[in-house]
Image 1 (cartoon, rainbow, N blue to C red):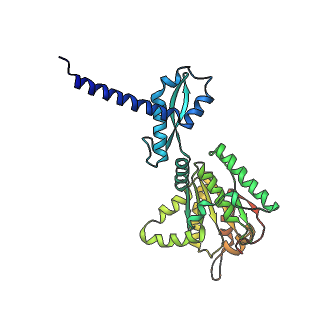
Image 2 (image 1 turned 90 degrees about the vertical axis):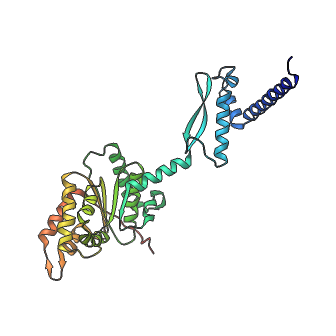
Length: 307
């Protein structure tokens, strides 16, 4: 004889499951994003698309709510998005703005190398610089280089020898260029040359001298900042800076400079003098020929922004 109690229990369970299922459907269909998607894509969808794609709609709402609750979902860094596929509804996963920003910062940190600079220099942007009319021309030259280099990184590009008074924004503009290039996947190194010279002297003892020089000379885009700020020994001039520039000449690597000296004054008042009563204009001129081969002089004037 049939067990009436067991049958009643099964019926109640099925009723409970059906009620729960209908409740889930109502919650899914009531979702504002689902309603907006159905309305916007009504003409593209199969008349029964909503019923045929119930599982996809549930997946979308469920994963979206997980993200909103801060629990994350199975595709970390990606958010669900409804799309039309063959007149039915599918779920695609797109990177979130937060994930894209994290990736951008990671790319920036890995591509933008610095020596002797503060960490904040990596966050410098062209948008943070307010140029005078005269300075706008310099910025255009920098932006032109960025555009051309990104179009063909293997071509031979001449950099800029950016010189001018203290505090007018030479380092700032070079850092902004490095930021833009690094953000677009191009390895760039910004070197404060006086600090680099000190680091190399200290590297002699720990046997890392060659590694430090190689990292700088081989970088795709190099910016030598504050050239001429401190006195330079013959060793730094000839065996470090000279070697770096010679390598970059031979391999046609983009090289930029900033200095308070014009090219002529850099040669006569800085590079030629390597110690008390030690003047060697010939070696200074030899180094200047390398600088002139790699970069063209551009004067940057303006107010001292540091004050």
